[in-house]
Structure formats: structure tokens, C-alpha cells
Image (cartoon, rainbow, N blue to C red):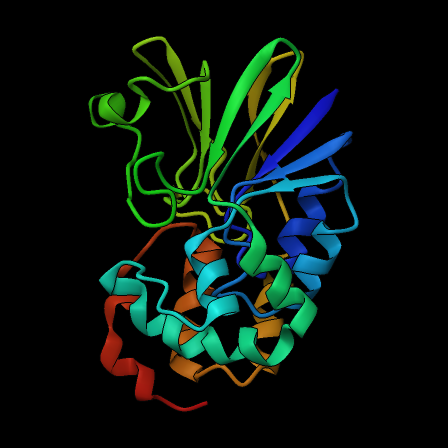
Length: 244
């Protein structure tokens, strides 16, 4: 069975469509289907047309339950600026689906057992851990799986930590590792391959421009999508009062 692993789609429909061109038998999603992006409802509904196993991300919980996403301080103004887009597009059924997603899961791929979580096993929605093996040691201790699939940081990596493989497929809709292409992974016969897919970034930016999202937020998010890296523009919360 060929499994497509995606995370942090963030309502970027163009990026999701490009990744779903990858042949697969099922899709595993590590959360944050919505949040920030201009087309959250269409992204969610496209994902649901596939054989899907998914866990909840902090932005999925925020959009479906009306609670803060508790994202990093630099991104909070962007989360606030784009939150009405999710609230306005998501139907009651969409919100019910997102709200019911579990915080963790397990999937068998070949002879390998993978644990699924958006952030970390100890804090499945909110803790940020990057590609540092030492930081992951406490998280994988006692884990009843030989591999862990995680998202949240928007950074693609593959680590071996005390005998446990920790894989982050990166972000489909908002990469932050310097490569603007949509990031994902494929698992076949228990082997994980990290991959990227080019997509029409300007199409996503045009979707932002058609939305009611604050103009300063659109400019910041457009810059992020074009370069795949967080710049000085992201933390300028005072710009949230700009035109748009």
C-alpha cells in the first residue's frame, strides 16, 4: 500500500491539488488542514474525497471550536486576520469533522507501525520541536511504535532518535524551510521518502486578494509563500491595521 503523508495544508488548495497528483492508496494528514489559507473549505472537502486518516491540528481546533490557535507570537496577527475566512467558509459539517478529529493516531505501513500526531506525543497540538534529535529524546521514550509522524513546524526532516524514526513531511501549504514548493512524504513498504511538488503560488495569492483578508496580512503571507521562509514582514503586527 502506498501512503501519502501531508501536514499543514492551511487552506492552500492549489498546493494540495499538486500534492494529490502523487499516486497513492490512502492519505494520512497530520493536522492543520485549515487556518491562514484562502480556501479552507475547498481544501478540506477535497481531502475528504480520499481514503483519509487524519489527526487534529491546533488551527483545526481553533476554527471548529472557536478557541485561540496558540500559534507563535509572530504569527498571531496573521491568524487573527485570516480567522474570519475560515469561519465564513466552513459549514457546520466541516466544523463537526474538524472538531471530532483525534489528537493522535496509529497506522500500519507494511510491517512498520507509525504513530501520528500534529505536534509532539506529550503535547499533541501545541509544542514546537524542530529537527534536533536531543530535543526529541523525551518524546520518543516509551513510544509503542518504531516511527513517529509529526507536523506543526512547517520544516521537513527525517531523524533517527534512540531507535525511533521521527519524520516531519513539512508543510503542504506554507513551507518555512526556504523551499516554497509544497512538502509531503510517501510511505511504501515501510520506507519513507520526503518529497516536494511545485505549484502555482500566484493562484493562491490571487485567492487571498479576492478574500476579505486584511491587505497587510495578504502581503505578508504572499511574501512567505513566494520564498518559503519567514521574513521580517511576518512579525509586524502593527501592519494588521493596514488597508483591505
